[in-house]
Length: 266
Length: 292
Ligand SMILES: Nc1ncnc2c1ncn2[C@@H]1O[C@H](COP(=O)(O)OP(=O)(O)OP(=O)(O)O)[C@@H](O)[C@H]1O
Ligand SMILES: [Mg+2]
Image (cartoon, rainbow over all chains, first blue to last red; front, side, top):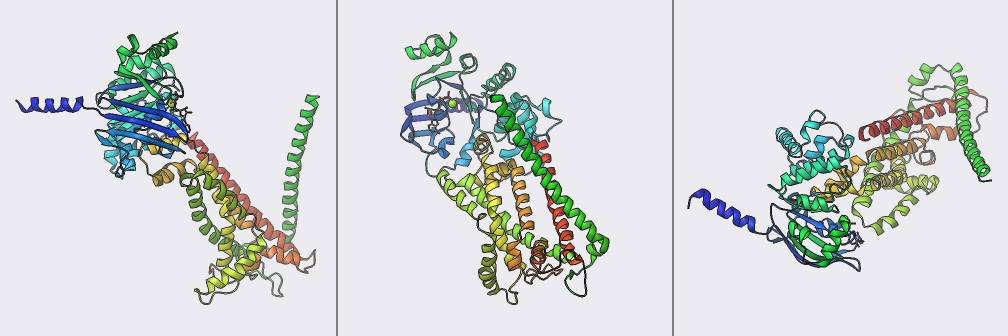
């Protein structure tokens, strides 16, 4: 076996492994049980969409993967979340490092009230990286990845808040990419945006899956069917069905899934 | 009927606004007229450059500098103490403390501002000064350090409470962004929250400075009543405000030159607080332009 071939075999065996795993995960907010025992595996370099009616626990579940629920009053969880096979709730896990590996993009664009440059460089700077040339290069490459570079390259010192909503959201994605995570969680990233900005971000997500594992919550069925490889349907804190996106949208196993999807399409 | 009610309310509000303006204009007018009278007898150059202030003595000198240095020194000490303490409290309450703790501690802190200043004055004189004297030998019983520190305690809630409001008003989405990027609590506080709330924090500090410069009772009681051009915090000094009370309460004849000195001192104080207000307004505008 040639060296190249051997490496590609190893690589594909790594790729076949699961990036994210949830094992019998339960979540409570005080006495209220928001997630009722969910197990699922998420494949690397794929886009996985979470769909389901409002309040069914999509955000709660998504935020378990970077432990963003940790600060919520009354939050409790059971079960296990693994990333690349290791439990992220283990005692010795450094949450800050975990979040550098698992980036997050939120529903409402939330750039820092700083310049465009400072926004993208933020994650690197808090890691103590100061080399100006390195920061500049990383800012440029991140902005290029989200196709924002040409629009802002002459205004890097302008406030990020002066950008349009769609540009702000792409900036937030660039900010996340700059620290080179391996996973990106997106919670309804386009729900506050106009159709053109939405299309740009969808295109971007499609391109990003070569390098990243992406999990996206969306209420937009067309969006889920356009950009995702796999889709998970949640209902009242439970995972009802999880399969190839094609299958979910053309031939779902469960009636609940079908009702939800067809109801949405009218 | 409804229309009339609204009209009455509207006119009432307008009237109170006009009364406020009228009172302010009146105060400024009285101050200015009396000050002009004063400066027809004392040269403004002497007033600004003479290093002595002895209007009540036979050898009269009318230099404002000693009173000004007393005011600035005590205020500086107060601010140097209150800003780090007040800001730490506000950051702790808004970014670290559990909600329930914040709810109980904040009103308690605000009580600090409600303590009568005369109580603070005696606290400085009877408790803080002896305590400081125990390790600063040669410290006078009246001094600006003790008065300044106690004044600092008094203005802590101005800074902690208003800064906490400003931090608390920063949208939670920014906190999520900061934590989502892997910030520690400290990084979230100082790299994201404090800059985002900076205009509110600066305004709280300027308000505290104005409060310190205008404070009368604590300095009158604990800092002494000896006008002295010095920046030594261990010796007695007199602030502009303390001098004004001293003369107002004393038996100086009302239309004498000695009496008019308080208007000259008063207008100096007024100019200072006016400048501070202007600066704070400018800063606020600049920040708004930057972030809007
Ligand atoms: N901080 C919280 N405290 C208490 N209950 C919460 C909290 N956050 C969410 N919940 C509850 O948990 C359930 C799941 O909420 P979650 O936000 O995960 O739903 P979702 O599927 O993301 O909904 P949406 O589509 O509207 O965003 C809801 O019933 C919600 O009321
Ligand atoms: Mg949600």
